[in-house]
Image 1 (cartoon, chains in turn cyan, red):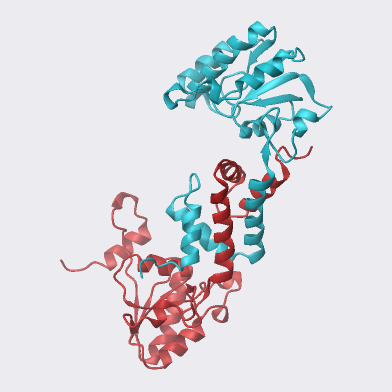
Image 2 (spheres, each protein chain N blue to C red):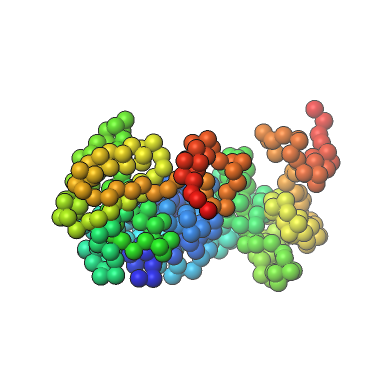
Length: 200
Length: 200
């Protein structure tokens, strides 16, 4: 007997290990949890996995994930069509939405410029963004790419393309995160926090 | 709009959050991974989940998990039927099997005695163990319950029941784990290590 696991369990462990951050030990623990949990839980999870792949798509306007195209952000009359927030990934839309503060629309780039990995402007949804701005309906584009080397470079690149179109281009604020301790802030973040200081 | 997630994605995140050790953030990360990964991966995982619940059962002899009853450990002619290793959970069988040293059979208790949680002897597979030993075929029972308060209490309880049946009862060795540093050993483990010292 090569494996101590029954074959179906082994297959489940192998599939779970393909997930990011799930190693051999976690995969085994999760698989044993599935064994113990009610069958309906496994059924519901299996259904949810299938449904996500069959029902979720990218919005043809903003490229955010949606189960109806165009997505609710692009069609909602409650949202300001003159304000577009540009993010790298659909998950970043969630992060912005959780603030409940932003009532504009979105544009998902589906990545960042990364010459080392061969990701140039044509691999990202930059042209559709320029097209949206070129309609003249947009007043401000907030660049909310990540505060990383790639995210910064992408924001700079986009700003250069967008400004000639006569639109206001802004970048999200950077500094020390709320609830953190200055003791643990890295130098770059601390520098940005000083640069971004405001009158009280 | 109450949730920023498309409904199928929200359902997947909710199901994933039911798993042990998977919080809101991990569930979101895994769900977005499923969105990006090939559809076949999601299909295979969904199938594996269903198969585990439909094809994996408990062995009627030892209660270990198996896809054929009785399990291969109980039926293999290569395994010594006079030696039984008693463990708490099916996952513990895997841990013992990984040593490749044990060639006896198993008995899974499906838990430990835990009066505070209302788990008494009748909730565990103790009677079937006594029945297996009562056949007279068994020479030694290795108690490999966990080195915890409950595991120790269960081992003591079993030893008291088993010894009168004329069988040798042993407990797995306890001490400092291989590759560890004495500096980080707790007092109870260190005491056990001293008690369990052997001639070199």
